[in-house]
Length: 230
Ligand SMILES: *Cc1c(COP(=O)(O)O)cnc(C)c1O
Image (cartoon, rainbow, N blue to C red; front, side, top):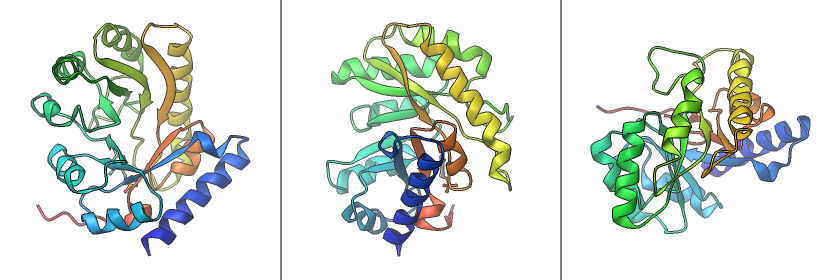
């Protein structure tokens, strides 16, 4: 049952918080529902889940239209500039901003729709070639540039750690993202806070929580394996 899976993940988060002396209220579980039907989302919505993550614009919009309106939608996938207009007024947070050009487009659409868009900067901490995200060394200058744009608000950082058998291997990357957020926070940049750290997926969220994650993105651990049809 999905709600049992959800409870198990929530419980592990809670234990990871206890072990590392953190308050469980500071960690939010995002149910990553990509490829899964609305009926499955509804099942855990009814169980109390209000945070859902999607990685495709069309799928997010389709689900947004039919699901209850008190959901916080998280755009966690790579975002193309020409699709920004469809989601700026629907998402609580865009996790995957990794360029000034993308941020400029978000800012432009935010002004048109008269909304303030919350974003995270995606950092490719592990420097994997296959992944999107800015490099750790470029993050500060990117934050400084984006912070000047109207209609957009930087809330923190996000990373997708490598796929590993042993989650402990990713601890270094989570610790690096946390340190980077502390360093940027110390610069006191206008319009920028570093309170949000989006890190940890099914394979490694407990390690991420112990290193300071405030948002964890769990798909498989709640909904089971994904089956891609295309
Ligand atoms: C799919 C996805 C997840 C969830 O992955 P699981 O391993 O299924 O928990 C988390 N973050 C991002 C950015 C994703 O694309």
